[in-house]
Image (cartoon, rainbow, N blue to C red; front, top):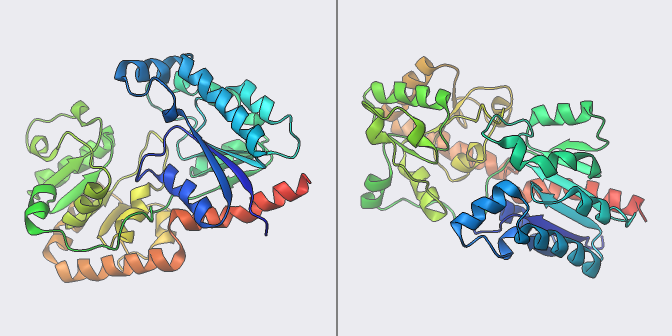
Length: 353
């Protein structure tokens, strides 16, 4: 099959982002690809200008970004314009791209279009106005799949989250770093009230716990939870080493985003670490309970299983190893997800002649 000419549009392509993993997957799978990223334009280096651009979407860098998309699409004769969470792409840019009837416009998003976060409608206003201008929609959110189909959007597909293949094969973390980064129980992710409540129960049970991620300054840090909150994210190889430094990695998905999974749902077992994930109808189809991962359905069950698996390292290790094998065998990596959608893109391009 002749490689597709793809224009890949995103906000950022920093190392270790899943956005970059998808870009790299297209290249690995032999596609002809060029990128336009908002990060390439003035304003990102200044925190003040970055925030102004983020909320107004009307600074010079946003207009330059949109001009660059149109220029690159024409210059490369792009057959596919793949847009990752196009909050900064003007609807008029999408309409201009659609003037070439042979071109396929792709919406890809891992966030909920109805997310209950502050000022969501403001930052997403262009994305929401342009929703019907895409030819095909890929989303990891099952609620969005249903809602988009109810809107009458013609091509809506579930593209599950995945592990990032950039991380090397897991190796033991040096003991000094393991003590510095890790604990019996670990959680990596942003603050939400329900997440705080569950992890407070773990801390109250006397288990050592460390929490990394944004927004935890909003938590009640009095009592046992205070020392657990590290007040920073872990990124890149430190993220990998933190996961490998926890005896039990707790998986709690965002209620704000109405998620069933997170990237960590796959990244933790893919790294050969032990995953204790909240139980739902999706994750129990991805991993066998008690064999490839463990699940909990209440705060009481979370505490009970944390205690049990901290005390049973051999069982923990067996499940972690099986979880990694499942990720490798079932194709739970970003490269696999991109490989799965390529035939659809090829058919859509061919249908446009």
